[in-house]
Image 1 (tube, rainbow, N blue to C red):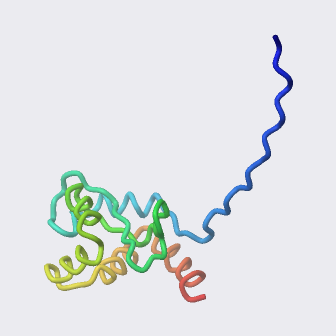
Image 2 (image 1 turned 90 degrees about the vertical axis):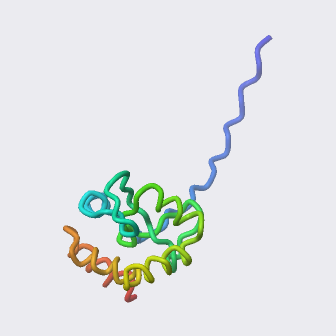
Length: 126
Protein backbone atom coordinates (compact mmCIF):
# COMPACT_ATOMS: atom_id res chain seq x y z
CA UNK A 1 0.00 0.00 0.00
CA UNK A 2 1.49 3.35 -1.02
CA UNK A 3 1.46 6.40 1.19
CA UNK A 4 0.08 9.67 -0.15
CA UNK A 5 2.49 12.42 -1.12
CA UNK A 6 3.87 14.26 1.91
CA UNK A 7 2.93 17.87 2.40
CA UNK A 8 5.87 20.26 2.22
CA UNK A 9 7.13 21.40 5.59
CA UNK A 10 6.74 25.10 6.21
CA UNK A 11 10.06 26.91 6.33
CA UNK A 12 11.05 28.11 9.78
CA UNK A 13 12.06 31.73 9.91
CA UNK A 14 15.80 31.99 10.43
CA UNK A 15 16.99 33.80 13.50
CA UNK A 16 18.98 36.88 12.78
CA UNK A 17 22.64 36.57 13.59
CA UNK A 18 24.04 38.98 16.10
CA UNK A 19 25.53 41.80 14.09
CA UNK A 20 28.81 43.40 14.91
CA UNK A 21 30.58 40.76 17.02
CA UNK A 22 34.34 41.14 16.73
CA UNK A 23 35.79 37.80 15.66
CA UNK A 24 39.45 37.15 14.96
CA UNK A 25 41.07 33.73 14.87
CA UNK A 26 44.43 35.48 14.52
CA UNK A 27 43.90 37.41 17.79
CA UNK A 28 42.63 34.31 19.65
CA UNK A 29 45.58 32.20 18.47
CA UNK A 30 48.08 34.93 19.33
CA UNK A 31 46.72 35.36 22.88
CA UNK A 32 46.63 31.61 23.50
CA UNK A 33 50.05 30.80 22.05
CA UNK A 34 52.02 33.86 23.16
CA UNK A 35 51.15 34.01 26.87
CA UNK A 36 50.98 31.81 29.95
CA UNK A 37 47.80 31.47 32.02
CA UNK A 38 47.07 34.94 33.35
CA UNK A 39 45.99 33.55 36.72
CA UNK A 40 48.62 30.95 37.64
CA UNK A 41 51.33 31.28 34.99
CA UNK A 42 51.03 27.74 33.66
CA UNK A 43 51.96 27.09 30.05
CA UNK A 44 50.25 23.68 29.96
CA UNK A 45 46.78 23.30 28.44
CA UNK A 46 46.34 26.96 27.55
CA UNK A 47 42.89 27.99 26.34
CA UNK A 48 41.44 31.22 25.03
CA UNK A 49 38.86 32.32 27.59
CA UNK A 50 36.20 34.93 26.89
CA UNK A 51 35.39 37.38 29.68
CA UNK A 52 31.61 37.69 29.84
CA UNK A 53 31.22 40.41 32.49
CA UNK A 54 29.50 43.39 30.88
CA UNK A 55 29.52 41.80 27.44
CA UNK A 56 25.75 41.39 27.03
CA UNK A 57 26.46 37.84 25.87
CA UNK A 58 24.12 35.19 27.14
CA UNK A 59 24.00 31.44 27.11
CA UNK A 60 25.44 30.08 23.86
CA UNK A 61 26.45 33.61 22.82
CA UNK A 62 30.12 34.35 23.04
CA UNK A 63 31.41 37.83 23.73
CA UNK A 64 33.64 39.59 21.23
CA UNK A 65 37.02 37.94 20.76
CA UNK A 66 38.78 41.09 21.93
CA UNK A 67 37.33 40.31 25.40
CA UNK A 68 39.54 37.26 25.83
CA UNK A 69 42.56 36.16 27.80
CA UNK A 70 44.52 32.94 28.16
CA UNK A 71 43.79 30.56 31.01
CA UNK A 72 45.00 27.04 31.70
CA UNK A 73 42.24 24.43 31.50
CA UNK A 74 41.93 24.24 35.31
CA UNK A 75 41.56 28.02 35.74
CA UNK A 76 39.19 28.25 32.76
CA UNK A 77 36.93 25.69 34.45
CA UNK A 78 37.28 27.53 37.76
CA UNK A 79 36.33 30.82 36.06
CA UNK A 80 32.97 29.28 35.21
CA UNK A 81 32.55 27.26 38.42
CA UNK A 82 33.03 30.10 40.91
CA UNK A 83 31.62 32.85 38.70
CA UNK A 84 33.31 35.52 36.69
CA UNK A 85 33.04 38.35 39.20
CA UNK A 86 34.64 36.28 41.97
CA UNK A 87 37.31 34.90 39.64
CA UNK A 88 38.33 38.28 38.22
CA UNK A 89 38.26 39.95 41.65
CA UNK A 90 40.76 37.29 42.75
CA UNK A 91 42.86 38.04 39.65
CA UNK A 92 42.89 41.75 40.57
CA UNK A 93 43.97 41.02 44.17
CA UNK A 94 46.77 38.71 42.98
CA UNK A 95 48.09 40.78 40.09
CA UNK A 96 47.27 44.39 40.95
CA UNK A 97 45.34 45.14 37.77
CA UNK A 98 41.79 44.59 36.59
CA UNK A 99 40.89 42.15 33.86
CA UNK A 100 39.92 45.20 31.78
CA UNK A 101 43.44 46.62 32.07
CA UNK A 102 44.77 43.22 30.99
CA UNK A 103 42.39 43.05 28.02
CA UNK A 104 43.29 46.60 26.94
CA UNK A 105 47.01 45.70 27.07
CA UNK A 106 46.44 42.55 25.01
CA UNK A 107 44.37 44.42 22.45
CA UNK A 108 46.99 47.17 22.11
CA UNK A 109 49.77 44.61 21.50
CA UNK A 110 47.72 42.28 19.29
CA UNK A 111 48.80 41.64 15.71
CA UNK A 112 45.31 42.86 14.76
CA UNK A 113 45.39 45.92 17.04
CA UNK A 114 44.40 48.21 14.17
CA UNK A 115 41.29 46.11 13.43
CA UNK A 116 40.37 46.10 17.13
CA UNK A 117 40.74 49.89 17.38
CA UNK A 118 38.62 50.34 14.26
CA UNK A 119 35.93 47.97 15.54
CA UNK A 120 35.84 49.79 18.89
CA UNK A 121 35.42 53.15 17.16
CA UNK A 122 32.53 51.81 15.09
CA UNK A 123 30.77 49.74 17.77
CA UNK A 124 31.61 50.82 21.29
CA UNK A 125 31.45 54.57 20.83
CA UNK A 126 28.24 54.57 18.84
